[in-house]
Image 1 (spheres, rainbow over the protein chains, first blue to last red):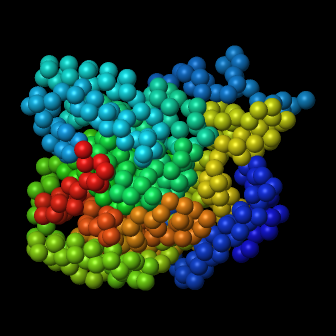
Image 2: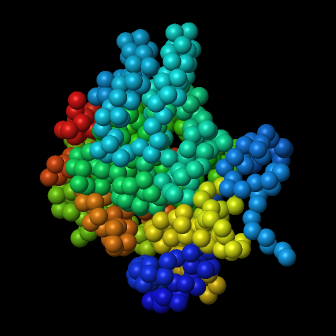
Image 3: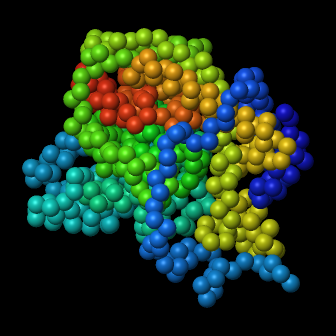
Length: 96
Length: 485
C-alpha cells in the first residue's frame, strides 16, 4: 500500500494534524512502509478466529455503585487551560 | 549508599543507620553530578524531596510509616503527580501541572516513598530508544553514545547509573523490559489489569501497563506489593487479591518447567546475545529447573499486529489533546479547526504524528476490516499460542531484545527497524501477560537481558525465579564504570 502526498494530507486532516508541506514526502514514505509492513497480516489464516475484544478474555469486569464521588474542582482543572472565562473554556467563534 | 539495593536501604532506614534526608541528599547529589551527561530527568524536585524526606524521618522516629518509608524513588513522567509538571515527554504537555495523583503515585506516596523527580521518556511513550522525547534523548550509562532503550529509557538509565534505587515505568509494547535489558536493570511489566492505569497518560489502553525498574527482583517485589491491586477508578483494573511477592521470593526453581520458544532464536537475534541468554537458561537447569522447547507459531504476527492495534488506540486516545482544555495551544487561531490542527501539529513530534496517522488510516472507513479487525483476530491467535504453551510449561524464557544497545541516531530514520527492536516484547502486551527482564550477562561490554514471561497473574512465580537467578549471579550488581563512585 503506497500513500501519495495527497493521501497524507487527507489523513492528516482527518486526524486534525497540521503537517508542514516540506515534511509530507517523508511521511508518505514512512507511512507507506508501515502499511506495507503490517500488510503481512493478510497471510494469516483467520477465517475461523474470533477477534480479541479484551486482553483478559472471560474475566468479568468489577462493578461499582453508581454513586457520586468527590472530584477535583473545576477551578483546579482550569488552571491548565489555555484560555478560560467565568468557568468556561474559550475557543474561536463557532457560530456566527 | 548508591550501591545498595532498595531492600538494603530499607533495612538501614529501619535500623536508623541512615536517615531518609541523608539518603535523599545522597541521591540528589548524584543526580546533580551525573544527570547533565545522561539527560535522564525531565524534572528534579530537590526542595519537595527534602521536605518529604524530613517528614518521613519524623514518621520513622515516631515508629510510624508505610512499607517503603523514607525510600527515594522516581516516577516516569507519564504518571500524573499532583502539583508537579507532568509532560509525558511532549511539547504538548510542557506546561501541564497535574491537579491529581495517579493511583500508582498515590499508593507509593502512602507507602512512604520520597519523590526525587520525573524521568525522561519517549514522547507519549512512543519509541524504543528514548530519542523521540521533546526534552532530548537519554544516554545509556554503559556507553553514552548509545541509547538506553525506550520508552522508559529515563527510568532505566536512572536505575542503572544509581541516581535512584527504583523508578516507575510503563510498558505498552516492551517499554519496561527492553530498556531494562539495554541498561542492565531489572524491569517487570505485570499482567494487564494488575496495576491501576488511573492517572497514567493513555497511549494504547488495551496494552498499557505500569510496572517498575529496579536493581533486583527482590526490590521489584517490594514495590509491586504496594503498586498492585484493584482500583475502582480504573474499570480494567482486576479485583484479585495481591500475593505477598516478597514472602514468595524464596520459592525454589527446582522442578520449574521452562519453555524456550524456538521462534525466538531465529535469524533476527544477535548470535552473542543468543549465547548469553542460553547461558542464563543453563543456570536454571543447574538449579533443577526443566527446560523444554516451546512453540509460538504465530510469533511472526506480533509486531505487525502491534503496529495496527497500538496506533489505532493512540489515534483515539490522543484526540483529547486539542488545545482547548489543557496542553499546547497555537497563537491566533482563525477558527476551531485551525486551532485543533495547528495546536496538535505544533505540540506533537514526528513519531507521535506518524502513529496517529497510521491509526487514523487503519480505522478509517473502507480499511477497518482489512487492518483493525484483522489485527484483533491475529491478536487472538497470538494469545492462543501462549495459552497452549502454558499448558506444558510454567514460564517462558528467551531474549528481551534482539541485540544490545544501539547507537544514538542509528535507527531514527527507519521506523520498521526501530519497531523490530520490540519483537520479543510486543506479543506479551497483545496477550496481556506479565513479562520481566533481568540482567543476564554482557556482550562487548553492553548488558543483555533475559526475558521471563509468565502466565496471567503469575508475577509471584516470575519474581521468585528472577530472585533465585540473582542469588547465583552478579550481573545485576555491576555498575557502569563512570558511575561507580
